[in-house]
Length: 422
Ligand code: UDX
Image 1 (tube, protein in one colour):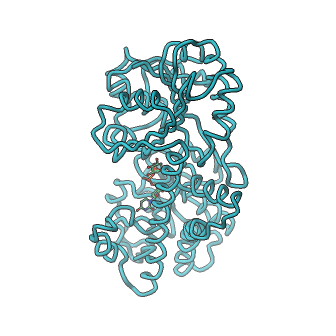
Image 2 (image 1 turned 90 degrees about the vertical axis):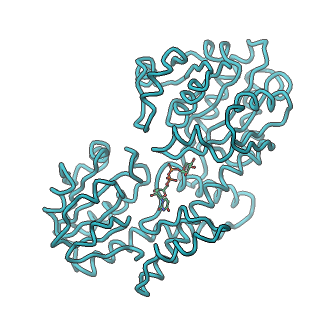
Image 3 (image 1 turned 180 degrees about the vertical axis):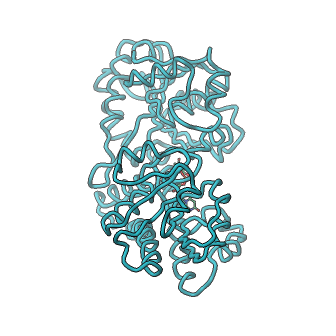
């Protein structure tokens, strides 16, 4: 099939290249000339495992452009994959989605053939019906479900594992309201052997939010139990090994510690809270999930003070700056919260990360950066383990004070070792 993808962020590029690998022709539309140039050089615009090889292998099957007319007229399905960042009140900023919908609609106005617009950007339940469809209809002067199709096809891609997640999903969710659109998307997704769920538009939108909200809740639950375990001298990892063996519960996403960051969980939970409040419902559980998540870095600082006392002029080393390993993404990273607090307390902050130092420097130039994990550990009064990069298992921590937020086993050899939830 012929597909166009609006927005070449990590969801757009992985989805497009994934569909190209499955035998489809793909046109990427982006407003960023730099990204268009990189994609047309057949290079990945982001750091994502396995993407580079797939882009080379399928180089004849895709190209990038800023021209919506070219992209929409030469494809049957358009996936909207632009960002939906948070507004200051936690609700989502739909400006990029609206801009994309308007540009697509202006070409739909000139197109005779049936075309499907599938929303892959994460939008709160009701958004496609209440905002996106009216925009498409207004600017195309055509009717949804009759002249063109509309769908919601949420993604469940983890950064760092996005290529693998694309090809091996647990489920495919297709939200649509008309049979024609349903059939087209069913055919496109036919190579996936996992369960396929056909639902209406807002149910598909809610499946995405409920999935992320549940995973965030599971982590905050693990952290709450973990914080109690810490006070009792119990290793919460042993506890969750026992808990996770219950088939109703499942062992994954029970890694207690510093909490969740990244571009999805914090933003999506906040957006769902904002939506619920607008509907007159107070989502107490979701609010607590965020509160516990915010508490974890503060608890790390408390443990640090237990051993160092006043932090003024103390050299504190951060191992890891990304929100999780195997990505260069520092959005909502716990490292940001820790650095802010340490600087506020006049500590001297030293940091190391295998891939994200340059990015972090743009935010914090008053932090000193080490060229290796060992150099950092050797030159500080205490070490905070913030991200579980594998290489941190090869560092010599002997003689040091280490507060571990991510459970690096080798760090237990330190003179003083404190796990956050164990
Ligand atoms: C997440 C979802 O997993 C994915 O399905 C969705 O589409 C996008 O958001 P991602 O943000 O890439 O993916 O990261 P993920 O691997 O889920 O981890 C998120 C955060 O939770 C990280 O900061 C990680 O360190 C933290 N985490 C995860 C824990 O603290 N404990 C755990 O047990 C698991």
